[in-house]
Image (cartoon, rainbow, N blue to C red; front, side):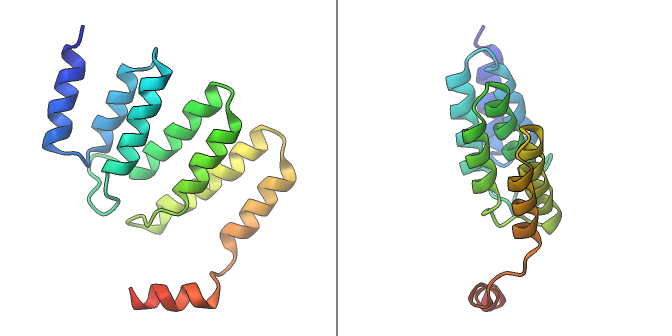
Length: 137
């Protein structure tokens, strides 16, 4: 039945920044990995971090990575989480949570050195050029 998909489309046209609705839509395609991936990709492109409603944008990124990991594709899960840490989130808590998720992914796969490197990278101060650039923004 296509009705849930059509309802989801209408709701997302009304509010393309609804995190909750994007996650519901992904759930509609749990039996079709290609459509689920396409939906995740569309969601992370569509939701503006400053306008996200009904949840945190970071939860879409996190679920996207978990989807790949649950299907045995750890390399794509890593790539998704790496991309997520480049997003300018509304608050630093979302970014910190994603850095932790990246480290936990490595720990789950017994990549202890990689997890430690990620945590060092997450807690290092940004280079001077990037600090001055952010100060101008």
